[in-house]
Image (tube, rainbow, N blue to C red):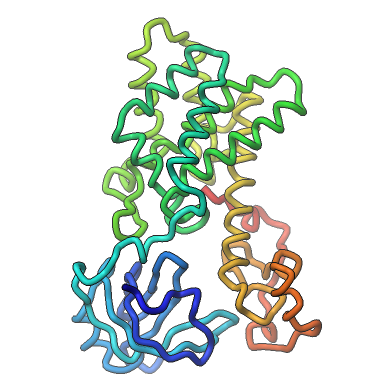
Length: 353
């Protein structure tokens, strides 16, 4: 039984507990002395750690994706909590409960999956309905779809994240199609459900979140098109143009070439899907960031390098947390040397796929 979780850690705490290592790097500092940078995670989040003393010795005691027992203390660095590790070594897998270490969607997975299947069942286009239901008639695909994260590090990074993200898109699409006339709701809903189906094979998530060999070599867009094409070919009489439109949704959902999209959206439905996909990913990413720093006294998150800005969180916190937040901000090192924010460049327009 895990004693302390990441969410419980506060500045100046000392602890002795088990974490899952999601990343490990042995590096040399400015003075040439070796240190270990390590990412420690459990189901409530992750925290960066540093082994400053006896780094070479400790480096030989564990690897990435090991469960490790860690002794250390918590301090604040650049607006975020960080662990100073005094002892770290591998612990036996039989001594831990894996469910304590991988974050999971708040809603039950089976409940969300049933809701997604119900949405597919309401589609009027018999070919699109059959395509989606045939995909999930494969027990392996269905199980992987329920459990896969939506990404490795940016959004919906938890067990059930892919399912939650796709279900969220379906609900957004229902509202969008009620607003705009002439949009093919069945087509765009099919795109929402299947646009990331390739992530069931691109991502690995049995111990920590990473990529499979297939994922690194092919990517989820290519894998997804292959999976959908295989099912389409097995459906007698599936219209060729409809098949083309479905596959275009998958191929173009990243929006632009710079974000790894083989094609740019060239239909109304593909355009809507691309923007909603990015919107849902960004909102989840920001909410996760804010929640991860809810225990901080500051009204702002730490500087987010990908967004190139700080995020104001005061109006997003529960009321009891807002009441505790000081009205006046005190200076810290991160604020004294503020990086430039809100640059008028495409670089600041980050894709979250």
